[in-house]
Image (tube, rainbow, N blue to C red):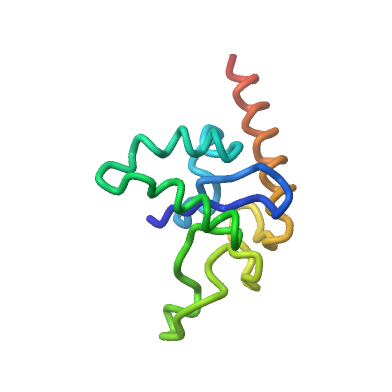
Length: 122
């Protein structure tokens, strides 16, 4: 399973820890502001102190912490990386594929659904 940090859009402080196996955020806890994601993941940096900060910096710069692209499978290495601002491939979701430029709206809707499901369970 590959897990990357995706930034919702260039101007919004919203990030998701995105699983390429499930094709959505790992959980509602894994969607939040930069400081929330940093606090959540930094304890797992282990010997690679600062790894989460580096991943967030890549997400700030190009929209994703990923360092691979779909074309890597075809032996063509390099950008656009999975989930980057320039990635022409839709981000797959189990509901519908979404374009990269719709990620912010998708995450907001996804968080609302998660909150509604949690409220129903209580």
